[in-house]
Length: 130
Ligand SMILES: [Zn+2]
Image 1 (cartoon, rainbow, N blue to C red):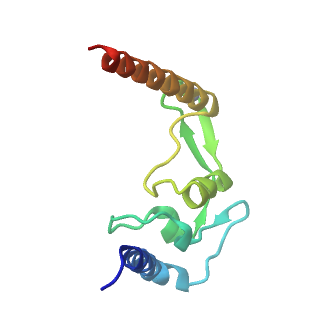
Image 2: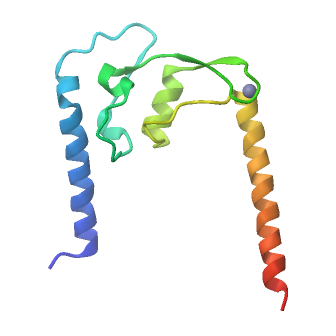
């Protein structure tokens, strides 16, 4: 009989093997990486249940990505280094991309924190009533 901890480790290892297998064909060929791009390390990406392979994994490197902020419409560049950080360090979902500029992102974070505070205060007040 295996412990839950052992089982969890097995599942994690299996998941990792699956990602490596899925991306091996992609990584077998040498990646001709243009200047200013950052290499992708597939095993460091967060596991996904999708059968698809994101563009940057197929390509083998991150490249700067211009986008328009969904709030103010300003054009900003999501740099290759920022993408690597988001996907490999922060463990962001591989299907997500940047949608807000820096200023709007900060504003949105404040707005969410404030909304959360008000919500929790409301809950506390409701629970305090008899
Ligand atoms: Zn913006």
